[in-house]
Structure formats: C-alpha cells, structure tokens
Length: 302
Image 1 (tube, rainbow, N blue to C red):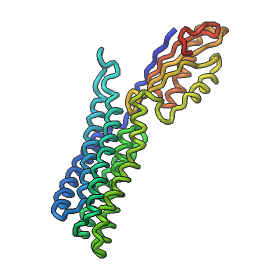
Image 2 (tube, helix red, strand yellow):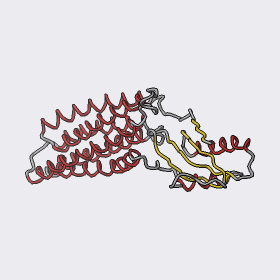
Image 3 (cartoon, rainbow, N blue to C red):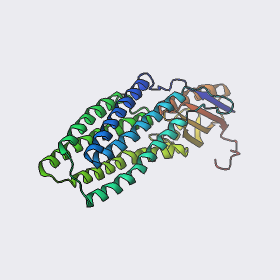
Image 4 (tube, rainbow, N blue to C red):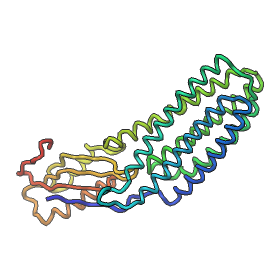
C-alpha cells in the first residue's frame, strides 16, 4: 500500500522578499556605478575589485529574484514539481560566479602590489562609507527570513560581508591618506578575495549538496527513523530517501513496516501521525509504502 501526502503550508517567505530583492538590486547597482567611476578616476584597485564583487552580488540578487518568481509557476506533465529546483541551481550558480571572480582580483592585486600607484585614500574612504550604509540597510531587509531559504540566506550573508569589506576599505583609505602606503590598496583587494571565499564556501557546499539530491542540512535520517519507530504499531522505517525540491521544500519516500497485529483501519491514523512528525522536521512532500513485518521487502536496498 502506497500513501502519498502533500503539505501546502510551506511557510514560503515571499511576502516582502520580492520588494527586498528589488531594493537590493537597485541600490547595489547604483553603488557599483559609483565605485567604477571613482575607482577608474583615482586608479584604485580595491574600489574596482569591490565593484566587481558588488556587481556579482547584483547578478546574484537578480537570479535569486527570478528563482523566487519561478517557484510560483504551476507544475505540468513535463515538470511535475514545476520550476522549484531553479532556486537551488541559482544558489549554486551564484556561488560559482563569486569564486571565479576571486582569481581575477588576486591576480591584479599581486600585480599592483609589485607596482603600486599613488591613490587618494580619503576618496576611497568616502565611497566605501556609502557602501556600508547601502549594504547594511539592504541586508537588514533579509534578516527576518534569512533562515527560511538558502537564497535569502545567501543574499543576507553576501550583503553583510560587503558591509564588512566596505568598513575595511574605509579604514584602509584613512591609513593610505595619512601614511601614503599605496600598497595597502592591493592588500585590501586580497582581503576582499578572502572574505568572498569565506562567505561563499558554505553556500557552494550547501547548494552543491542539494543539487545532487543530498539530504538537506538540519535533517537527520536517524532522527526520522527514531521518531517513526516511537509511534505505536510501527516496527521500523527503511529505504528512506530525502531530498530538496527547492530551497524551501523537502521531500521523502520510505517504506513503513507495521506490526502484523495492527488493524488495517489504524494505518490511516499512523500515516497522519508520521506526516505530522515529518512536517515538524521540515519535510513537506511525503510518499510512504506500507508493509507488514511478515512481508519481504522486494527492493534489494531495503
């Protein structure tokens, strides 16, 4: 007997997310333009590096917004889960873009370190101060929902790391202004690259795992088995598969073995009890095959 259940209350954090993404895209794109113009005019590699980083973040925010829009597309015969998986693929793509940008930043930073050029430290500090305000304000728009979705968490972490980088640029610009140590500009670029790695590696690892249908973070197969086997009448739960449909929805298939003495009419009650337990563990789409303990599981991997 196979039972398929769906929960339609996925607590999708979409109420203010669209507005947050749009505001973030607009503000950060304006800041990128400012950094490029000033960076080129005063020959500051750190500003240009940060502009490239922020431009990648703008692209990431735009792709994340697109992914959230695609979550609303209804399923069809060709895509039975709709386009929910795009939210995971976008998170993976965003992480890869940011990591690729590191190589260019480090290469140019090393070159500039060996051949430092005079730059205006005070100007760097003033532009970076604008970045602190923009990135902090934008990041706070995602604060409430950052633990509900991988893309929202990605946006929050990137924006907060950008604010920290901007703070570093402010301090570096002041040091350059008073000391004339122009090589600090290159050091700041390398620091930016390190910050990108630290803020992106976890995102890359999580999104890659979900893309490969790995068990989502904070979900334990053993805990699920234990919870199921605590239900009266359940012998065990096996042949468990858990994967992410999107960055907000998870699915499970499993074989549920019931005691021989359990009346058939109690199966429905056990199913709903197990479904309730699984929903508390952030699993929304559930397919369960019911077996009795005297039956031999036909699947060789049971």
